[in-house]
Image (cartoon, one colour):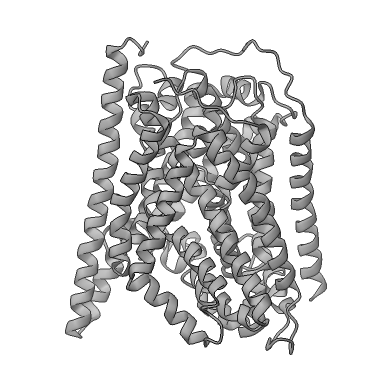
Length: 547
Length: 46
C-alpha cells in the first residue's frame, strides 16, 4: 500500500508545522528560563541563537524532509541514509532517533496533555471556585502523584483522540486540527496576555502590579551579564527545544510536500510564528500574573524546578480572584490554549512512526495510527503509574532532551559536511519564495554545529551550580544534573547516603529501581526500532529498492 | 514599568510580531505556480 498522503494547503502545512513547534514550553519554559537567566539580559542571546541556530536548523530539516519525500521516504532512517554515501551504512541507525524520540516523548507527553484537558473540564465545571491556594495545589499533587479513575480516563481519551485524528490523515486530520487549534490558541493567548499586562496593585486582590514582573522579565537583572556563558547555554537550549528540531517530525511533515514546493519561506513563517507565541504571548501570562499576586521573590523561588507548578497549581487559584465569569473564561482559555499547544505537537510525533510503518511495512494509514496509539499506551503506562518515582522525568530527560541534541548534532554534520553544503544549499533554495541570505551557507556549515556542540557540552558536562564562569577559571566540577552524573544517579545516591529515616530510605531505593527500569525500557525501545529499521533495510534489498 | 524594560519589551515584541506577520502574509499571498518538472535531482548517496 503506497503512502500517497499530501498536504491540503500551504497554510495548513505552515500552521501544522507551527503547531508542532508551539508546545507547553512556550508558555511554561520560556518565561521561567528568562527569569532564571538574567531577565532582560536573556533576550539578546535568545534572539541571536534563533538566528544562528533555530532558523538554520529549520532550513536543514525542512529541506531534508522534502529531499526524502522525493524518494518516497517519510521518516528519518532512510532520509538520512539516502543523503549519505551507501558505504556509510550507519546513518540509517542514526535516523532511528527520529522515530524513537517521537514514540518515547509521545508516551509521556500525551499524559501531560491529558492534564490540560482535565483542567479545562474542571474550569468549566467550576471545581476551583472558592478553593484556597493550598486546596488547588493539593488537587494537582493528588492528580499526578496518586492518579485515580479520572486521570486514567482523561489520558485514555487523549490517546484515542490523537490516534483518531492521526487515522484521518494529514489533510483530513492533522491539518484540520492545526487550522482550528492555532488561531484559537493565539486568540486565547491574546486575551490572557491582556489580562496579564493589566494586573493592578489593589485591584482583585493583587498586591503588586504586573509591571513589577515585566520589569524583571525585560530589564537586565542586576549583576547579570550578556557575556555570561550560562545565559548563552540556556538561550541556545531554549531555542533548540522550542522549535521541536532534532526530533524527526519536521522532516516527516516536510516529506509530504510536493517537490516544487518552497521550504525557505514556509520554514521562516512557521519558525517566527512559534517565536510570536513564545515571546509576545508566553512572556505576558504566567510571570506577570504570578508576580502581581505573590511578588518576584516568591516566583523566583517557585520556578526553580520549572514552570509546571505555576501553570497548574498557581494560575487556577489566581484566576478565581477575577470573579466567577472571568475565572471560568480564563481557566478555559488557559488550559484550552495548553491543550491545543499540546495536541498539535503530539500529532506531529505520531506521523514519523506512521510514515515508517506505512513505507516499510505497507500498513494502511488507519492501521499504522492505531499501532502507534497502542505503542504509546503501553510505553506511556509506566509514566502514569510510577510518576511519583520519576519515570515521567526520566523519559523527558533521555528522550525529550538528550536524544534531541545528539540527533540534531549528527544530522547537521550529515547535511553540511557529508551530503555537502553546495548540494544542501541547492536543496534549501530550490523553488524558494524568498531570497535566502547567502550568509546562511556559512552559518549552517560552521556556526550552527558549534552552537549545537555548546548545547551538547552544556548538557553533558554541566558544571556545579551551572557556574560556567568557574569553568573559565579552570574549576570544572560536574553538577548532579549533568548527563554524566545523572547517568550514574549521583544525586540520588547522595540523598540515599544522607537519609536515616527507614521509610524515606525505602522510597528512595524504590525510586532508584524505577529509574533504572525506565532507562532499560527506553534502551529496549531504541533497540526495537533499530531492529525494525534493519528488517526494513533487508526488505528493501530483497525487493530491489536498495540501489 | 521602568523605561528600559518598556523599550526592550516593545522593541522585541514589534520585531517578532512584525517578522511573523510579514512571513505569514507572504505565505498567504505567494501563489503556487511552480513548473511541474523537478529539475533538482541528486543521486542517492550524497
